[in-house]
Image (cartoon, rainbow, N blue to C red; front, side, top):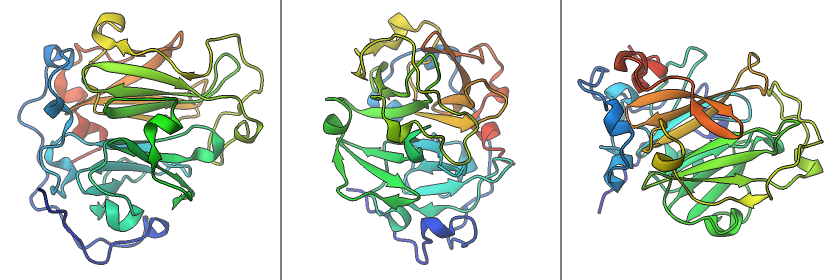
Length: 291
C-alpha cells in the first residue's frame, strides 16, 4: 500500500499564486527519451496505460503522464499528477509542486478533473466511484457523491473529461473518456441559473438551442470503431478559454506523453493536430513549456 507524503506548509487554494511550496523538483527537468508513437496512441492498451509512473514525483517536466489538467473559473490553469499539482503561469510554465490533499482536502492521486464552461465554472474532481465539486476554490457541501448519482448512472473508470460550452446550436456537455478506449457524452439540462456568463469567460451563452438528443448520459462509444483517427488512450483533457474561437475555447487531449489539439466537428471531437505530426512538436512537455 502506497504511503502518501505529507508536505509541510501546504498553501490554501486562495494563496496558490503567491505562497511558496517547500518541495522542489528532485532532479533537473528532462524531456522523455521516447514518446508513444501513432500506433500506440490508437491502441486501447491496458489499465496501466492510464496511470502515472510515480505518484511522488515533484517534477512536472520529468516526462511522466499527468492525471488531469483544468482551467479554473478565474482562468488559472492547474495540472495534477500523483499526489501533487502545479499552477501554470501565463506562459504555461509550471510553478512548484503542491500537495493535493493538503490544499484541496481530497484524497490523492485523483483520476481526473474538469471545470464546467458555464454554471459558475464549478470544478469537479473524480476518483474511483466518487466525485467532489468546488465553487470558487471551496468544496461544496455534501461531497463526495457517487458519480453514478451525479451523472445519470455513469459507470466505469473515468480517465479524462472534456468540458464543452453551450452555444445557440448545442447544450453544455462533458465527454467522459474511460479505460478500454471508451467515451460517453453527458449533456446538461438547460437551467436559467447556469445560462449566465461565467466571469473571465469570453463567450456569452444564448438561451435558445437547436433541436438535439435528450439530456443526460449518452450511449457508450468505442473510440477505435466510431472515432477513427482519434487516440483511444486519453489520459487528460482540458478546455482553455480563448477569445479567438467562436465558442470561446481551445480544446486539448493528452494521450500519455503526447497532446493533441481538438476541434468540435458536428458535435464530435476530432483532431486538429494530426497523428503524423513529429513527436517533438506535440509532447506534453512542450505544452507545459518545460525547459
